[in-house]
Length: 119
Image 1 (cartoon, rainbow, N blue to C red):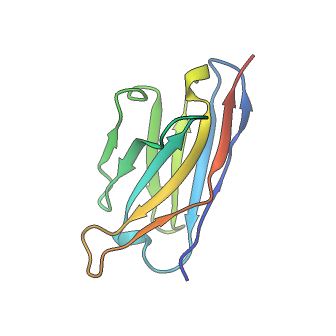
Image 2 (cartoon, helix red, strand yellow):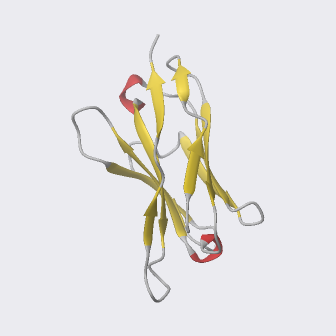
C-alpha cells in the first residue's frame, strides 16, 4: 500500500523559512512526478511545484524564486524549501505522487501539513 507522509510544517514569521518533507512508501517514487500543492482556508487546492523523475523542477509564478523543490531517490523523499515566506503562503500543503508516465497510471496524496506565516 502506498503512503505519502508529509512533515515540516509549522508557524513562521514573515520572511522566515521552512522545509517540508514528503516520504513515499512503496516502489513508486522513482517513476513519479512529485508535486506540492496547497489549499488556503476557503479556497481551492492549487499547484505549487513539481519535480520530474529526472529532477527537472517547475514552479508556479507565485513561488518562483522563493521555493525550491528537490528529491532524494535513495530516501524516497521530496522536499520543498520555502524561503522569504509571506502571509499569503499560509495554507495546508499536500504532497502528490503522479504516475503519469507509467501504466497503469496512479495519483496519490498525502494527508497535508499546515504552514502558517504570521507575526
